[in-house]
Length: 449
Image 1: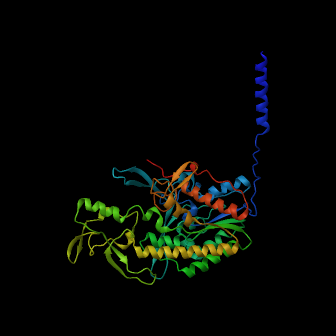
Image 2: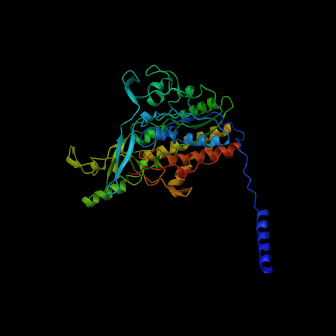
Image 3: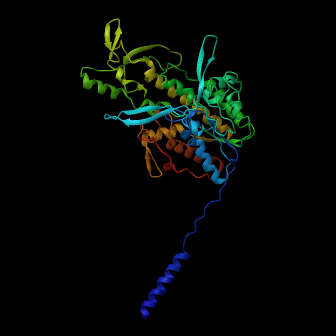
């Protein structure tokens, strides 16, 4: 071998050894729960906590609930087991739910109800007053330990009601007793066993029910009542010094349920067939306070929010009036009914109440040293700017956005993974833990046909 070849080999070997000697060390922080204890984590909340999606509660949604995702990540640093009240595999479709069958030529989604392999065991009629009754759907009973106490439909307002286990089938299935003989409040039930850490996302339905009914099928929970009850709930959840994380209530007027079918889009469609049409008419609240109950017909504006389920085929259909048959939605005598529109004043009132509720949540959490997850800000930011995470782009658009499920209100597994990560960030920041974030790309958006 020639001398210059030997020299080159020597220099190359020395260079490789030098690079090896300079190889940076990667120091992985030791797993720590910080000042928190995740050995028994429980989640308190409503449908968003249970994994509800596509208009129903079913096994796949439960398995991808945001608390389940958090718990999986907690277990990587020593967190305990997390048990959910799952529907069985034989009844995996739970309450039933919506599935996307196709997209029509004009871009309208075509959905169908999944009704096989459900867990419905019957219905019961429960008296709610001396003159009124409520028909309650009952589901297959669950027996066993529970860490995820999410109950679709529950409000902060009903969380301390002893009879609530007779009025909500999702809660009734968790209880040992049968409706209508239950007498255990939700708050007492979730705190009946010792726990070390909690998440709380109660309060959304205290505004959502009013909004989704167009302001006529429910009422907004009084602000003072909300504050008193939220203090009561948090005081009980922290009674033994437990730590936890709480979330603010989303801006319910910003979800796809209110931003997919729009006044402008409906009117544009009407004008294609009837160029003379100038406006849609809605029956709208005349003031933006909780006291006023006066409604009057007026031309609709883009500030009026139409619900996702509005049957647009009604527009223009003849309606009998004292002035003869007139086209639905196109005159002041045939306005779109209240239940289909959250009008501008109802929007303003809903937003005002949600902001008040969130101020209460932040204040109470601060007084207890709890982590706060500002979901109101997170989801509004996604609506405004979108979100890029783990190599995927997400928006608040219906179906294509990846965040919201087919009901336009609840989240997809991917959306719940985003929420889980926001909880994890807040928990880590508040308690000095290092729970790893979930891979959002590993969870699906809307199932396409």
